[in-house]
Image (cartoon, rainbow, N blue to C red; front, side, top):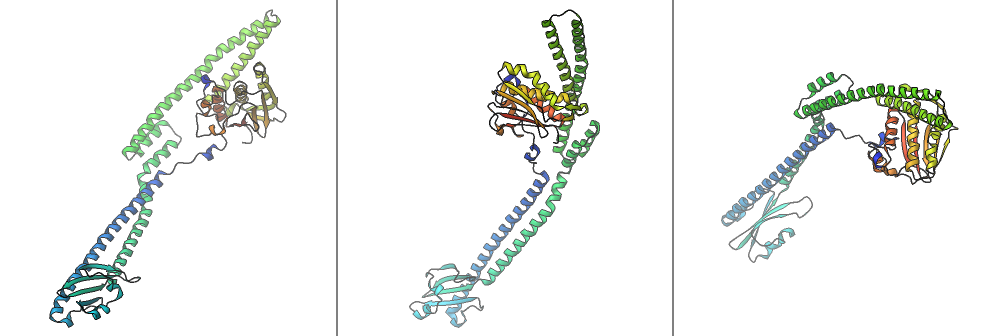
Length: 447
């Protein structure tokens, strides 16, 4: 059923498994939620960037302040040392002055170990002798001595930590505020789009819907969308009116030649006919009856009236009729066609629509399966058609691959089957058959 090639009958839509299609279709993400997330993320990013900038500027300013304090105090201490050595030490507990005259080993011995490791070279150094400790050391030489000024930067470190905590709290506050306000802001920006989608989905007159769309659009983009939707509705309405006119005309125009053909056959039967002629007349009558039934059923599908035509139907008898109708073609192609109607119940449904569905499925199996057996039957609320042919690719038949039928050459018949099943509310599934071949199932009861 599944792999025969028939380019002239390429199906424009999916002849695929319909069961679970809604579950397989993922709902697109919310534009409002995305905008809200983008606003919140942007606000948080800006806050982080600003906090980082403030922190970097403050950190460098603090370092420059420490270097300036050290340089000024060291110059003052050197000047005082030359005049009054006892007054050279800084008058603050967080600074310590060390004077190392050339050749004085005792002065070198009193230095802390982390200061002795410093090179005797003028400059400013930053040391971390222990956990949580930070010292800035300025070294200068004057005449015959080295001067080392060590500054405990704990106060500056505490101030920097406080600044960092304040910046982190401000970023957190901005992030929370952005999260609280971004959803509302996104809602306001997308309000007309939301209203536009609700108005489009509401049933009502075309004129009323057009007026609502024009009133809802509050932005240039949504106004363009509203205009495009109105234009699309105009075209769709015109197309539907043409289709309704065509179906009405087809129903009217076809009825006359069909009735004329039927009357002509009745007249032929009244004459003297031999066995061969009578058999031909009966064949033409059967084709005429089938044409009348097909025309009425397809027009009902086109008008969406399939459910209204439901009648009490013996499904088993219908299966037998379809098999009898296509038995000659199956025999000519060397295919064993059989029906298993034993378990089929009586159901209220559109008999003609189900006849068309089954006839197309069986005909497709006969012509395209490449098998030797085709069986029709009933099982657990479903009619089925199975063959032992080359089978079908399950992956090709998903709701996300809408041209699977055309790609596999399954024919126009399956496109008709799909449309009729949609119109009647039946579920169509076409899948590989266990053991090889293809299994087509139509759930018409309990589904």
